[in-house]
Image 1 (cartoon, rainbow, N blue to C red):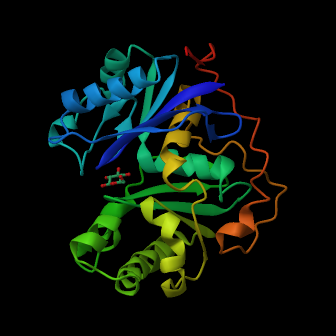
Image 2 (tube, helix red, strand yellow):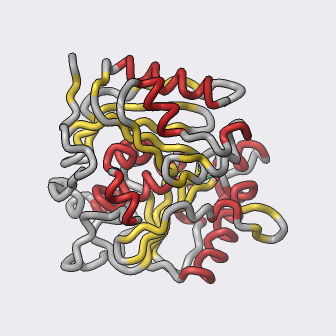
Length: 293
Ligand code: BGC
């Protein structure tokens, strides 16, 4: 099934049609810079433009960098504050003329990694962190997502985690990889003390540069870079359906039969994630989406 995945970030809004059975993009992604100010009307226009770019007539899954409950935005730390209380799903349905489901960006990225990436087959507690404009978090216990965890706003040593260790904080304070990794370690240590995760997945833009800082990371648990890198949000957005959102379930392909592997390098999980999941069902969206060109 093809679903258009759209990922709204602090700096860019990007989308692509996704094959939800294989977790792959069906066309080159289209990216438009996030408008400033990032008001609901301005962002809705851009989301509409992304859908028009693909001449899309079908279901859309869309991420939002804030808490989203039942389609309504509850927080917007890195976008315009006027978002709070806006029914994002309705707004984007109007601007795209398509049915839209909205969810938190890190939750979407986590679902993508649990289904097709380095969380696949992992039971126990898996924590996905996205290090970008902010820090997003997605927490899974035995494959079940606890949505909207917002761990990037946890105060650590008098400062929010995302103000310390996001990619934006690295740029803002002009930190080298080692100095930045030290900040990431502080955040990891706190999260480990609170949640005792079995595996932490590091995503966001910096997951593609994992080699630059992996040697500086210190952790009691397994840390691995996200496999889908910057496409995780788009893929995860396309995977989510209303049924799963309501049940609070994110990871459909976590198989109890798989043995977690002590992998820390990107190459290690490649085999485990080959082939993709065919279990994905989108019960709420009965009509398959299609690209009309
Ligand atoms: C937001 C989260 C979001 C994260 C990454 C944080 O500031 O509160 O909802 O997941 O940034 O975009």
